[in-house]
Length: 208
Image (cartoon, rainbow, N blue to C red):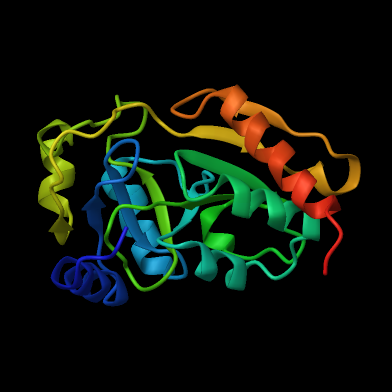
C-alpha cells in the first residue's frame, strides 16, 4: 500500500517526539512507540500495565527498512523474511548482535512488517492496544478508554480482521532448516509452509 502523507506525517511526528500512538495493523489495533526510546517504551508499559522487559515485536512499515536494520541475518532467513512479510505474521529471528534491546527479545527478536498505508518513519515497538491480558481490539472503540486517553495519536481505520498475528519461530532456520509456529493466528500454517518452500526454491535456483 502507498502511505497516506498527512497521516504518516502526524504519526512520524508523534513517534519522533517520544509519543505513543494507537494504530491499525493488518490484524488488530496496536499500541506503538519509538523502539529505541527508553522513555517512550517505559511510558507504553505503564499505560498498558505491561511487565517491564516483557518481549514485544519491533515493527516496520515496509520491507526494506527491516532488512537494513537486521544485517546479521543469514541468507536463508532473509529469504524467508522476504517471502513471509509484509503480512499477518510475527517472525522470531536470530538476534546475535542484541539489536533493539528495549523490545526485550534477547537471542530472538520478534519482527513484523505491516502494510497499512501509514509510515512512522522508523522502527516502532508494537504491541496490541489493550491492557495486559485483555482482549484484542477490532475497532478503535474497543481499545480501552484509558489507553485512548493516554496516547498522543489514534488512527481510526474502522473494523479490522480481529485475529492476532501468527507467530513463527525461525531461530533455527539458518542452521537446521527447522521452523515452528508458536502461536496460530491470522496466517495459516499451510500459507507459511508454502511461502517458505517458495523461498527455498528461489534460494536454490541458479543465477544468470
